[in-house]
Structures are given as C-alpha cells and as structure tokens.
Amino acid sequence: MELVFAILPVLLLIFLMAVLKMSGDKSSVISLGVTILVALFAFSFPVKDLFYSFLYGALKAVSPILFIIVMAIFSYNVLLKTGRMEIIKEQFSSISTDKSIQVLLLTWGFGGLLEAMAGFGTAVAIPAAILISLGFKPVFSAVVSLIANSVATAFGAIGTPVLVLAKETNLDVMNLSANIVLQLSVLMFLIPLVLLFLTDPKVKSLPKNLFLAFLVGAVSLVTQYLAARYMGAESPAIIGSIASIIVIVVFGKLTSSGKNKAPVKKVHLDFRKIANAWSIYLLILVLIILTSPIFPGLRHTLSNNWVTEIVFPINGLRTVYAISWLTHAGVLLFVGTFVGGLIQGASVKDLFVVLWNTIKQLKKTFVTVICLVGLSTIMDYSGMIAVIATVLATATGALYPLFAPVIGCLGTFITGSDTSSNILFGKLQSSVAGQIHVNPDWLSAANTVGATGGKIISPQSIAIATSASNQQGQEGEILKAAIPYALAYVVITGIIVYIFS
Image (tube, rainbow, N blue to C red; front, side):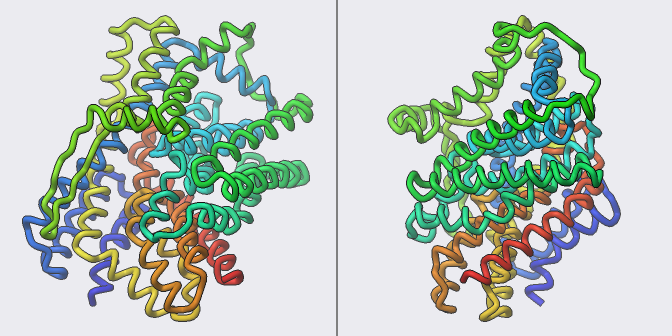
C-alpha cells in the first residue's frame, strides 16, 4: 500500500493533464493537495516538516526556475519590442529556407548551447519563442523544443548534473561522463532525425533527413565523447552543440535550393545590424561564460559574495538554501537583456513596462511551478520517492539495469531537474550496482541518461514551454504529444544499459 500511495500523486498529475486535459495550474494545485494528504496520513509526515518542505520547494521554484523563465521570456519580448527579432528571423532564413533545418538549428544547436551554458529552462523557452516568430505553430514549437532539450541536459549548466552525481556517489567524473555519452550515443542520432521528421514528414525528404541526422549525430558523439573522456563534465554539451551548429549551418548553405521557402521580410543585413540584433543573446552568453567554471577564480570570487542563505528545519536537520546572486542565471539573463535592450534603442521605461507585462503574462506559470516543485519536495522528504525507487529496484532483480533509466526519468519527471534526480537516486543506483555486480560507473550514469528522457515530459519543462509559446492551459495537449517520445527514449536507453552492463 505504501507504493500505491507513493505513486498516487504522479499518476494523478498525468491523468489530470493528459487524460482530462486540465490546465497545468489547476492540475498542479489538485495534485499538491493530494500529495499533502498522502504525506500526512499515509506516511505520517509531521505537519511542521510538511510546512517547511513546501516552503523550501516554493523557494526553489521561485529561484532559480521562475526567475529564469521570466527573464528568458523577457529577453524575447524585448527583441519584439525593439523589432530586432525580424533581423534574427532573417538570419536563420538566410542560412536555409528549409524549415526542417531551421528547427534543427534552433532546437538541437542553439537550444543545446543554451542548455550547456545556462540550463533551467532557457533551452526550451527561447527556441520555442523564436520558432513561433518564424511562423511555426505554438504547440509544435513547444513539443520539438521539449524533445530537443533531452540529450544536452546530461551536461547542462556547465556539467552540473554529472558533477553532482560524482559527488553523491564518490565516483570519477571522467568515467561517469564517458559512460553517459556512450549510453546516449544512439539518441544523438535519433533525436535529430525525429526533429527533422516532425518538421518535414514527406517520404521524399527522408534521405536528406537521414543523412543530416547521421552527420549531426556523428559530430555530436565524437566531440562529446572526446570532451568527456579527456576534459570532464563541463565541456561536452558546449563543444557538441557548437560542432552541431557548424555542421547544420554548412549543410543548410550547401543544400539551399529554394524549396520549402518560408515567407521572409527582406532586409539589408550588415555586421552592425546583425551584432545589434544579437546583442542581448551575445551579452547573456558572455556573462554565462565569465561566471562559469571555465574561469574558476572569478567564479569563486563572485559566488562567495552577495549570498543569501535561508535555513529550513526539515526532518530534524537544517536544510540550507543558498542563492549566489552574482552567478545566478536569472540575474545574468536580466543584465544581458536590460543592457542589450538599451543598446537596441529601448528606453529604461520601455524595458520595465515589458518586464511587468512579461510577469503578468506568466501568472499561471507561477502557480504551476510553485505547486509542482512543492509537491516534489514533499514527496522527497516524506519518503515517497524513496519507496517508489526501492520497490522498483527490489522487484526487478537481475533485470535492474533495464529499468535503471526509469528511476532517473522518474526523478526528473517529478522534480524537473536532472541534477535533482541525481541527488535523489544517484546513491541508490550505485549501491544497487554493488549488489548485482554491475559497474557502478555504468549504472550511476544510467540515472543521468534516464533523467534526460524525463525532461521531455517533466511538468515543469512543459510549463516553461507553454509560457514561451503563450499556450497556458494547453499543458495536457503538449504532455500527451510528448509522452510517446519520452517512453521510446527511456526504453532505448534501458536496452543499451542492460545489454552492455
């Protein structure tokens, strides 16, 4: 019965969103209410601990998740306000008028780079918004952005999930990183193919799509494996995304034939106009790089100044939540957007008006994300997540490697974070590996790999996608469209993990 009660909030959330097609805010409020009741009466979770668990989750929802969502959409809205989005659209169309190449470049290439540098939803929000501005349907833009934001999340935010996993399991970072790339190898070919096929499903386009997917997959696999094996967790997604962008751009230029042309407003592009149009994203990228582990001295100095620490007494322990404002991704997005907006000719008043309108635009997202992260935190501290994972590990026995990615997927589905999934289940995977005589590096890596699949259908990611595409209320439709891809993703990774374990 513990398992039944533990899994009830997850099943209820999926049922409300995917079957009843209830909006994300309503689904999350109801699911949170049920989670509270289950924690109180089925898991005897003290009211005091329940209260602080929710507060802790709500704070994690506001910072960094909601802070970053608001600033990511703010950056896009400023580009609309200044009219520079038209130049960015022209830039993408000048590379290729083939819509499938535009989608792959924006979601897998540019989105992968955003995920590698910042993470926390930027790789879903910004590509989805730009795709809509290029004329793609909102739900399609949201779904392809979610599917693309999978493989790159393993090494997202400068390798944070893998670095955390290594710390939790006391395993070597480079061995973990290399195993993760190997387990994701097949997906590096399949995900680009899926993105191309969803955009252009015509049979006559299949040879071109297969060839491009092979090129992108091959360059992603080779560059990420070499980076993981010889450099560690910080660089595979960055190097792989940059290499993919180069391949897609070159392919688009070489195959540009006038087919599949999208209506584009023709403007004269010179270097100054291009630099001005991209100033917001360039500034954001520069700020993220400067505050990343690439510059350890500067990052250490910044991360240890202007730090806010809040303590939550949960389960008899002091849980400290620290916010380092000078390296906070949301702050970096705000500064880059604000300065870039001024460069593009917006006034200070204009920028604050856009920011306020952005906040109003996302009011339902605030409810959804706060409830979801609060729900996941309560499930974690009350023991529900541990029950689900332990039962699955016990029930599968020697077949456990086949299901190891499912646990990672579950962690990300509930928490919305690959990093959080590794914190929750990294030790479990490593300890089970010892019991069934499997390499702990391999099985621990499977947690991160499964977690990348969970990102596709994580309600928090879906909330970000609906916010970016202005489709609040359509969370159920997007979840329903994304579930088959997430399931196939986890099945494929499970088979790979099992065969080579």
